[in-house]
Image (cartoon, rainbow, N blue to C red; front, side, top):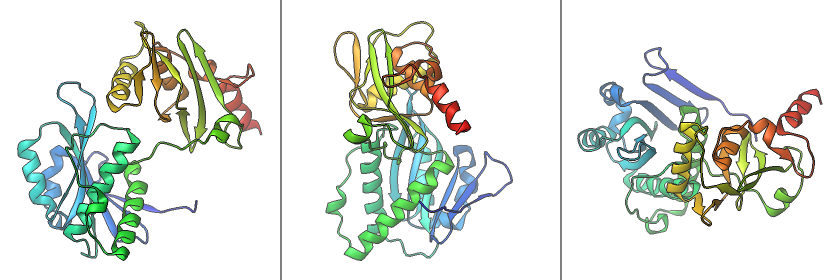
Length: 294
C-alpha cells in the first residue's frame, strides 16, 4: 500500500483538546474532541454542515466501551440534542466535507454503512437501534462509489484519532492459517482448558476463529483482561462452548501476545514466552528477536 499523509491540527496546542484531521488529496475533514470541549467544537464552521459522527464512552451499567454512530444535516444541532439526552459518551468524532457536496442522502448512506462495518468488526458494542440497509437508501451509482471512497478514507483517519471500531478484523484464509508466511508463522498457545492459534497480521496479533479459551479465571488475571473478556462475550466474539471453555467465533486482533494469552488462559501471562511457533519450541519472543537480526 502506498504511503499516506494525514495532517493533524491541535487547535489549542494541546493533545487532549480539539483536533482537526485531514488526509492529503481528500475533500473530507474530521474533527474530534472530548465532550468537555463541545462548546469549542460547536463554534467551528464545519459543525453547521451535514456529516456523520461517532460518540464513544462507557456503558453506565457494564462499564464496558460502547459507541453510537449517527448522521445529521446539521452536526451542531444534533450534538446539542445528544448532550442533553445521552449520558454515556465522553468523546465525539465527526466527518464532513470541505466542498459542501454532502447531502442528506449521502450521510444516511454513510451512517448505515458505518453501522454495518462496525457490527461486522465487533470491536466495540454499538448503542444504535435498527438502521436501514444501505441497499434501501437510493443514491445514483456514481454517488455510491463516492461514498464508499469516503468511508475508506474515514477508516484510514479514525485509528489515528484513537477510534478503531470501523477497522475490520484481519481476514486469515485456511491456507494462511496452515502455512508460515513472510509476515508471520502460525503460533500456538496451550494451557489448562485452553488451546489457541494466532498469526501476526498487519501489525496486530490475531487469534484465529475456533480457538478455545478457559472459562474460569484466576486472581492473577488483570482487571483490564477481565473487562475485555466481558466485552468479547457481549459482542459475540467469544461464546460458551461447554462448562469449561469459551470459543472464538471469528478472528480477533489483540494489541499484544500477552493480552491475547491472558484473556485465553484466564490469568496473567507472558505471551512472548507462552506462544510458540507451531510444532517447535521457539517462543514468540525468540522469533521476534530473530527478525531484528535478520
